[in-house]
Image (tube, rainbow, N blue to C red; front, side, top):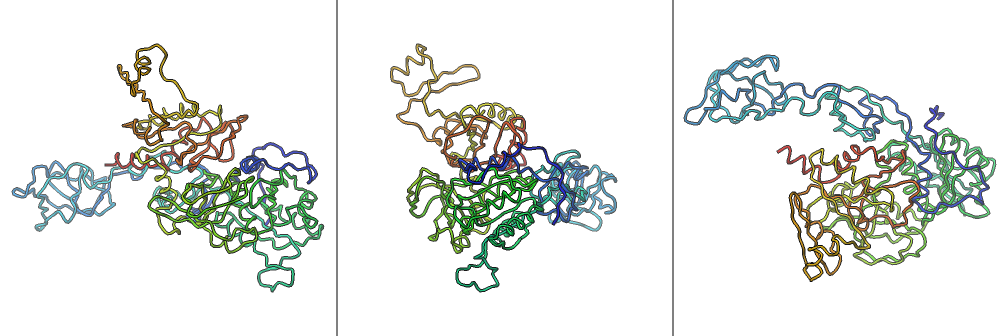
Length: 614
């Protein structure tokens, strides 16, 4: 399993090795991920045949090597004609066309007064600009009888409809699906650069563990973590290598850990908490792992460690199955996604309605195994009964994780919570629970698509909006912007005419001039977002600055030196924009790529394309 790796761009070097007892704990899950993603750069590319590229992550943008298709083609089985020839046709005075030979294509001109039989997808002859479907024709010997005119372009696929030469048809970071491969095959592409799959070694530790095929003796349990973790790794598209069980003997532990350094990632499960038998952390340091942090304030999953052994990323995971799996979902999965070159590193947290009461001890972020389903109002979720760290049945039964923030102790049925879907949304009871449908439902009932821009004060939210608006307008979208100010604001200047009439008690004041109108409404309380949106007619997209507690899609803005002390936004995250590169985030200079993602993921893009196609 030896791996020869090129040297990536040098990340920040790890800290000098400290004694295990002195290792700092991560202040939050987000801080832990930030530290990990400094080192989890995407792996180098490799070229694979088109037939082997399904499910792989595209490493580079793909430009169309030629027009697809270079000439107009028939959209129906029928007869290619010149629309001018049949313009006077009517049921009373049909036009008669001579049916010519079917041989030839776009390089052969259709003579006036003739028709040529064509099949769907075949090139139409030059000068033919319409196709009459078979069911709308009558043939008399070698003559086509046409009883109605057709407009130019009817039932014809225009040339270059799918792609123009040089056009970017797929972007780096796409997970290649059947539709992608079909398009590339049509363009004549036979090989593709894809990101190499991460190789993940998985080691369990403990004298009490036995393989599933053995009957446990007193004090023993069957080992399950490596099987569960390997399945999760493989389902992501990475390669999993089970290293089996290591005993608690220090020298054996060091040897088995070093065996895992041949992989890109090593997961060591068990022995990470404080105790006389928990020797794994010491063995990691003796094996040459430079630990970066130990412990994350989450439950379950607190005793998590991360370190480096050369180019190998090493994760120490808890031994109890529920804790190990939660730690994998929150800490390991984003790192693997980054190494795979995926566009979205952080799996989405989606808003859902709680169906049962929840009581937890506050202080750490809490995760509950749950079952998610669909209702007419959107996603619903119910926690499973078994939430112990040693549970296996709840992990098996769950198709979602509920996330509860550290300050929360109780939740009631009907409260909104954030969940992560663990199963393919298509396996849920209702296809309306897919991520795209949830994004759609997250839009306010006004029907106007909205996108919040959130982040710490000073991180650059307004700067991002300033750069987004021109690109959106360049693509033909009408954009509105709403800024949320929790401290209140004053739009008018004291002493002006409008200020004076408002002070006199007018509930609404408007001032109109050339090319602009301003309206100020006085309200008894803060209006809900849907009410504010109703005052922005004739726009295709509304950008919100703030509104992080609204369950709408958002772009998170991050800037070095500007940490956020706000709770996580309520809606699903669409993208991250940062002043630094890496970790799957975009920069402030990658606005076209950000707008590409907005078009792909919001209802805005679908409605605009449908209207333009019509």
